[in-house]
Amino acid sequence: MKRIPPVLAVASLLIAAPVSGHASTAATGPAGASTAPGARIVTLRNGLRLLLAPDSLATAVDVAVWYDAGSRHDRAGKTGIAHLFEHLMFGGSSRYGPGEHGRLVREEGGQSGAYAAADFTCFYETLPPDDLELAIRLEADRMTGLRITQKGVDEERRLVAGERARNTTEIGRGLERLYAMAFKVHPYRWPVYGLEEDLPRLTLKDCLDFYRAHFGPARAVVTIVGNFDPDQAVAWAKEHFEPLKDSGRPGPPPPSEEPQTGERRATAPGESPSRILMVGWRVPPRTDPDWPALSVLQALLTRGRAARLDRALVTDQALCLSVQGDMSTRKDGSLFFLAAEVSPRADSAEVEARLFDEVSRVASGPVSAEELERARRQVETSVWFGLPTTRARAQALGNSQILTGDALDLDRQLGRIRTCTAEDLRRAARLLDPARREVLWLMPAGGGQGEATGGQR
Amino acid sequence: MKAPWRVAVLLAALAVAIVSRAWGAAPAVRTLENGLTVAVLRDSRLPIVQIQILVPAGTAQESDREHGAAPLVASLLTRGTTSRSADGFTAEVDDLGATISAEAGVEYATLGATFLSRDF
Image (cartoon, rainbow over the protein chains, first blue to last red):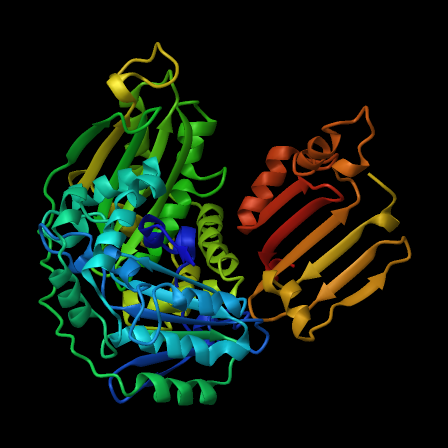
């Protein structure tokens, strides 16, 4: 069984190629290719949505259940419950013992895994095609039949405690800080792992309440991707999932953020052996018309050797060792972020100034046709190159459905990315307003300049 | 580099293509007049093409006086040719949004590329 660190689960189109969707081929350009050809939705009587994407050339079938249970449902003082629950879901039921679920999948040569994210928790099995019914049976079993005990909660709490420290990187922890700076009232301000001090406060009753409220069929999505017969899959899904009753009551939606009116700054000493400048902007979610242009803008700034920030900070002047960035995309908003690892002798203020200058140059200056085309292609290829396996396609399809409510969204995004203009890019760049940015410096312990001395700040 | 007849080129329409042989989609294999073996597997699910070139120039082919030569030579494969500078080559790959990789294994050095079908 594989557990994926939550930080990796937030990445956007650029890094994780997370998106999805079958659409009419008209939206998908000359090749007429779709990221999920033939995908369709079947809704069962209890509200459970099945998202089916058959692929007769695939060697495996992937079943994934996407629950409306993420850190966006966390409450103050009780953060991290969605992530703890991801662990509890392997604790067994009245029909299967603890860990038996994973063992049954392994015995068939399959793999299973789970991860909690801000907007959902996902459980999956990738199996030989003949084992589709096993996956459906196991997932139906724990959808409402999970056994949750005090002993199980205590055990998993111990396991979860060290997980954040083991699985996060400097940039990942920096991203958590940027979220905390950019979101003041929305639960996105808390890490998906939750706050360390909250973990001991999560009780057995909290876990039972969370299970009843967020699991169950009515708001869940089941993706089935790969080599399977859709009619047979629907028949098994009806047999195993349809008798399940929903007891969930969705809580009120998370509060909305007020518009930000001034730059926010923070310094985190001891977080990195060298100085890392991280900058973030809260930008609209994937359903927004500007989102594809923001993806292309991210590529224009950070993807490839000719990207503007690579040129300005790494190649032309050795101010930084590397520059990276991404758009972390969530249901209620995205975080556009950049991270630059500063050279030991470079001046921090100069790095900041050059970086912000490059961002504003897109908003007000020219973008050549060649540069635009390169950036559009970088995004497009990152989508296609990210879909080589059945698991990756299932991931993209489910992400699309959860984040946009539209399983066909990835194909549409690709269409918009291909037709993104220089003017679209300028409009997107204007969203990266100095008054709305979060500026975070990850610093070496003791406030030094990094591994070499002699720099100035 | 060994003689071309010991070089194999694998063309696949995408990454999963190689796996799908297990399900009956057999690759077409031809040997060209110069000895180069080419295997082609068509898979139209994604609009991308993958090429792998396998050259029997891995670390097992190094003589006692050539330790390290295989990875060194492999890494030079993406650093320009007599007709293209290293920077020019990287820029062309970047412009396509493509990826190119080269590495030496024990038996083979592998040069790989992934790009959009429309650039094939």
